[in-house]
Length: 160
Ligand code: FES
Image (tube, rainbow, N blue to C red):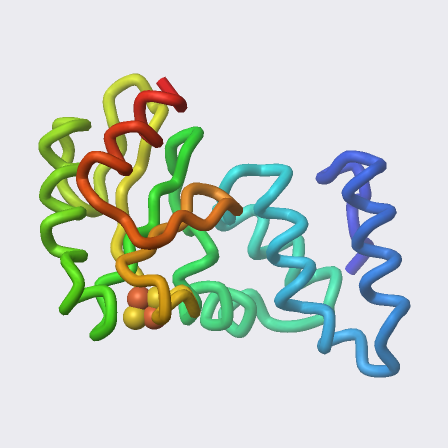
């Protein structure tokens, strides 16, 4: 099946070609290509999964199973700012639950939801690799550590 290059921008296509050219087995670039397409589209819907599957000559179900395994891939639309709060053990014992409740109250949404203006989506994740500076969260690609409700309030205000 022929890959429709116009599905992504020229810039994204160039990144994909570069990534796929780095590995003898192109499949090694799959996780990175999922990222690049998600960066452009905002999330990976069925069309994106199917397109990537064609690109890698894989069944769409296989690409979907990879994308759905990792929390870093969004399979449905998310807000402009994706807030990922770690609730694994180190963050949990240092107040992650309080942080989650604070954000829910502040934004008026529950975990898994997006604010009506489409600005913020809140999810919880398992370990962001910042265990030494728990509790931690990511907003899009930025890390925020040693969180307190006051600190979170300042961060959210700066994004409004
Ligand atoms: S447990 Fe939260 S960053 Fe590792």
